[in-house]
Length: 357
Ligand SMILES: Cc1cc2nc3c(=O)[nH]c(=O)nc-3n(C[C@H](O)[C@H](O)[C@H](O)COP(=O)(O)O)c2cc1C
Image (cartoon, rainbow, N blue to C red; front, top):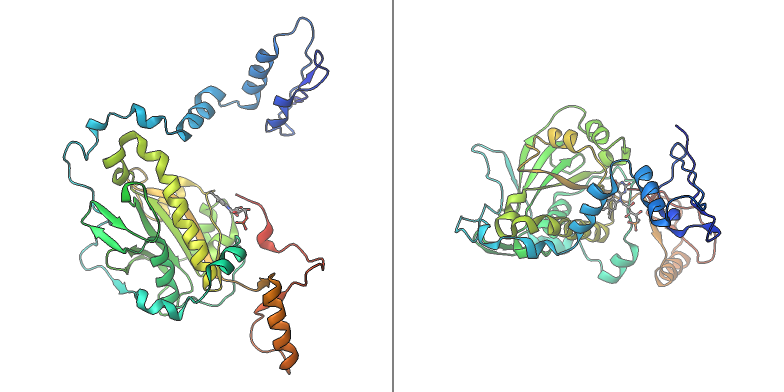
């Protein structure tokens, strides 16, 4: 059925401001004119809402809006949480199966060899990167990214771990899975990070992982193309044990911190990441062999070396230009390392400027 949304209000003579915000699609059009015998403007809004939100504005949108508020805290029966009932805290890390294949990772004392970037530059240059060079990551670089996102810097048993990212109640309710595609010395496959030991657990490998991942992400091709793709799963009980029904509001905040650290640490080693929240939940959980109830994927991000770094800082540009004048290269060697963007010159929009997700 074809309907047109106009939201024309004859009494006030114009397009009602409320209607501009509705997600109007070509096949979802509503036409309405406010006349003498027509219902009140409030009723019109309800009608338009029910047409534009066929799933029910009240049931879903309103409850999700309420969910965003911390009012939930006042409704929690704090005496009923696992912690208040004296139940032991769930383990800070999933168990390691016997005879598992693990890989020890280089520790933080080795990271100054991979990361020497200053924070200001990293913050200036951070962007979502969806195109990656074929260059593999070294094991040190991967270890650095894992440590920066979920490494353990302090611990009070299973009650609390401290990491480079904050977490509500220091609960850190996530596990990190990796699809390692191009990491030096690592076989291609799915791994799990063991933050307590700072090592990798080999989970499994199978043919066509990159394609399956892309398919599970609704065809977003770049997702399977990174040197490594990070998948964060959530084990909700780790947070519910302490916060009951107030746990779920803080989980997306927590995982946002984790992904931001991935963006920043990736940028600092000349790599780029792109956060991805659009994926087929059931397909991705099945692919990673998660039960989908007690543990499921909450966020993911491919990472890879940048194909070219766009130099926008004038000081940086001047330094490179004077180096070029003093020592002009005889011929170009190796992969392209930088695209110099001269201030004021028009440049083509890079692929990472796409706005998606
Ligand atoms: C919660 C969240 C979900 C996102 N999901 C996707 C996604 O599924 N696919 C995608 O290509 N980009 C996704 N992005 C990346 C955004 O499109 C990107 O951050 C935005 O366009 C701004 O660009 P910038 O990160 O380079 O500043 C997501 C970003 C966030 C924060």
